[in-house]
Image 1 (cartoon, rainbow, N blue to C red):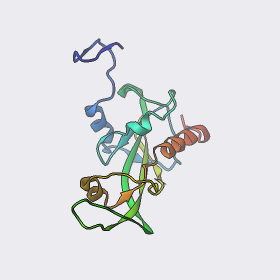
Image 2 (image 1 turned 45 degrees about the vertical axis):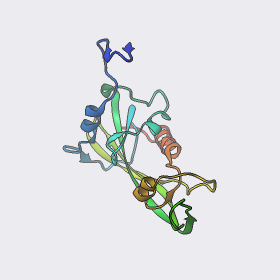
Image 3 (image 1 turned 135 degrees about the vertical axis):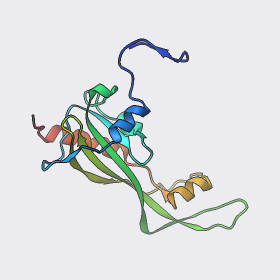
Image 4 (image 1 turned 60 degrees about the horizontal axis):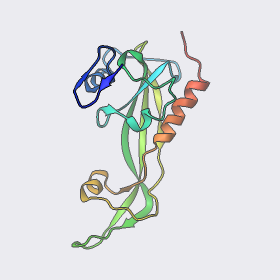
Length: 176
């Protein structure tokens, strides 16, 4: 496929996964709960269910043989529900130019994964992957970022999610 960037046109052929495709892959109507353990079938699309978009930071870490680029390739969908969790006893002192300093809790990101065999329309289950706490180096955060997360959060576990998917794809047999 040849895309002419900046012109708003592309040649006929499969289109990259877009917002309408994401909405389709977020629908859980008609999916059956599977008694099987989690496995990965074919190419994968990773969707951030919290923000309702492709989770590009994980998608780009997938092996080329597993990375779906167009909707017709998708056989497995992975939904990620993001949340934060306070690290007990860990807090950061903030420094504001015009406000008194205050302590904010240290947080880790949790990624609750739900794996769907899209080809067979089956919910397979999932796993929770927890990130690490914030680093000790100074970082600037806006009030909006701090209020949204409720504290100082560490990095999201994108690589750990990609590793989990790769490990599952290599170690669990896929039913016909």
